[in-house]
Length: 157
Length: 269
Image (cartoon, rainbow over all chains, first blue to last red; front, side, top):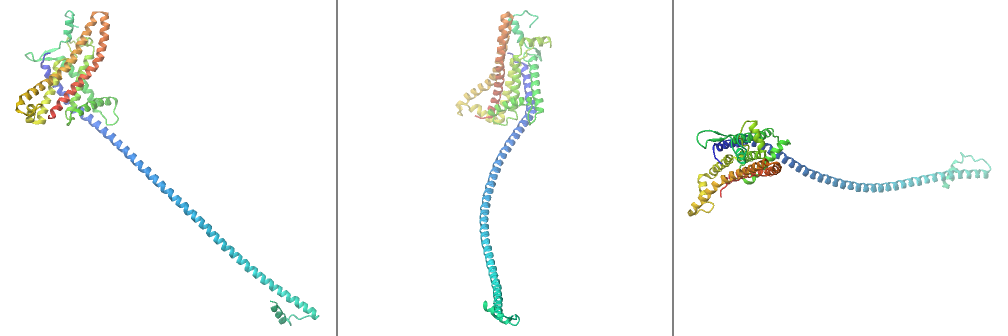
């Protein structure tokens, strides 16, 4: 337990070591640690941001999906309506067409009937003429009696 | 072992407690313990050189094993300082705490090395008959550290509070501002200022010195015969393992007191 010059020399050594640590050891290590802390904090923040963005995106996608579903159901409703409309229109058109065909047919039938009647009338006139000729036992000059024949035919109408 | 004298318990212990001295100048004060100084400087150069080499290549990316080890120690100390000292700790206090902890730990750890083997090495390889390898068993070392801290404490007291503020603290705390209490306050503070470096240094010195003496006694036991050798070896191993705790704990306590004393100088009562 004798205090001597060793104390002073040790104190000098101590201060040199403190100076060395303050100057050369502490700052670079602190810088490295702080830089790493910053990197980690940035990474965490980026992760948080990414998570937030993912949440937003999933919300947006679900929104879009919902809208699409709605649009699809609207389109289906419209299509169904359109289909029934088309069916209705087709029905109407078919009915009209049918009517038209029926009318045409009727007209044709009438026409046919008319021409048949005409033919009949002609034949009746001829038969009548032939009958008359037989009755008169002589040839009736068709040309001479054409006027008469026409009159008869008109009468048959 | 002391070869030129008869080997007695007294000469054995005397030998291990004798410093390698050199007379710097006339007078009993101007004696230098060469072994203490050289050993502590070598330890400091090795440990701070190692840390410096690691730190020089320190990367902010993924650290290597050695860098992670150094960072672990540094962050541990930095956290302890942060909890105690509320100023710009990076300027002086935290690096100083690192210095104190690492250096004292290394000096204390020399105590764990087998004392007679180290004595044989220093005597037969380096030719030093007396060479104490544990610098912290030298009261000069512990006082050097504690007094350096003490002077820094005084410096920061004046720097932070100013002469007037410090004087006010010396006279008016802890009992009050009443002039009747001034003398009492001053006396109290005087005792505190004297006891700080004493307890700071003697706690470290006492613990390590006592550990050294226990090792010497166990080593002496080995000289009594086979059973003594066995018991000495077993108990020596046990004491060395326990000493790992003491060595680390004392270094930590010394560092914490350093930080506490300096942060007390920064804060007014």
